[in-house]
Length: 130
Image 1 (spheres, rainbow, N blue to C red):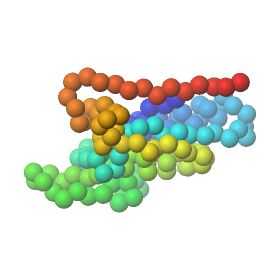
Image 2: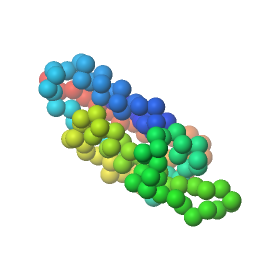
Image 3: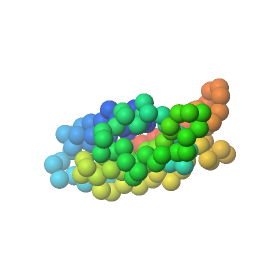
Image 4: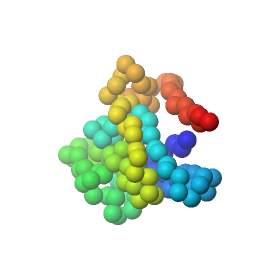
């Protein structure tokens, strides 16, 4: 299990996790990824600091759409799901599921630090079956 928010994605957490899994399995093992709940592309508003944390080839409209300027500062809507799927595909993982839930918009099911003040958590678990 790996957590890869925007900082983790930019730092290569997915690539490192896939490399570690490949080192720990048979060479031709089929890796399957599942993307858990995260903030969706219609809600993940970022500034230039987040945008420039990613390589130039990932700063385009496929991953970051310009948002109309407000408060004299340019903002973008970032698509963490698309970035994660791209990184997984580049690492050779093509079986990818999940990514169906937006923690910002699904208020009844998920806590969102960006939406709510105070504490709150949710967890995802993984199990290996023999």
